Image (cartoon, rainbow, N blue to C red; front, side, top):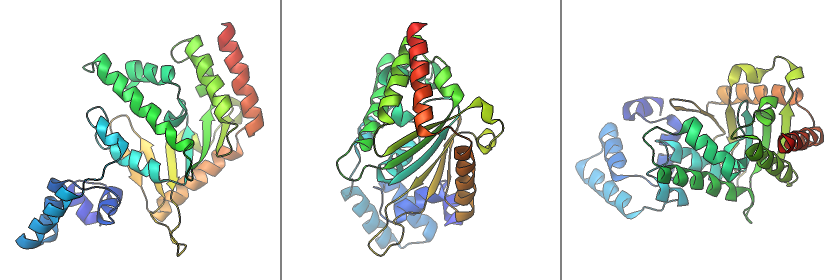
Length: 268
């Protein structure tokens, strides 16, 4: 799998999902895989034909023109996850951002100078649509969030926008499937200082008790994304998340701090 992924210039996680039938496959990808694996011409033709016929796509494919390359894989994993452990040192996690906060990020932080206002708005809509999985009727995922204290103190977009964002954070933190905890500056050095931002995604168990997909660590880099699914790699990030959590405020104390900062931004 590792050698094939390298040859096809795809991550092992992406290739695993394609081979397991977890995602729709493009004809060009199927053809490349057949060539890599030495499939016969007849088999290649048949599989490419199947790929053409089976184009079940998630809602996000309608925004393919504004979704960064490769990020559609992450959205698919996010939709399928039953639990997400998320550490953010600088920004409110995307799933918990308000529209104004997200728009500020798109315009000033991640947006390319060549993006039009219309493209930025479509990217904002993608981020907002992702939030629906937290309130879906059928098995919404458990979301455990740890954020650095800087996240609640830095006025992204100005004090008004930040006040609205923090009020939203406090509200969603009361949802039964969401926990938000703040890592205070006073905690000093912790593993998150070394790891940077990351998510650990876990997936539902099948009827036989086995994992439907391997736990996956995702990190959103400035110039590219990182996916890790080796047990040893996931275990290291698990331990890092536990270390960060051990130095975080309780959920109740975190909510109190978030509301306190929301009031501060409202009055500033």
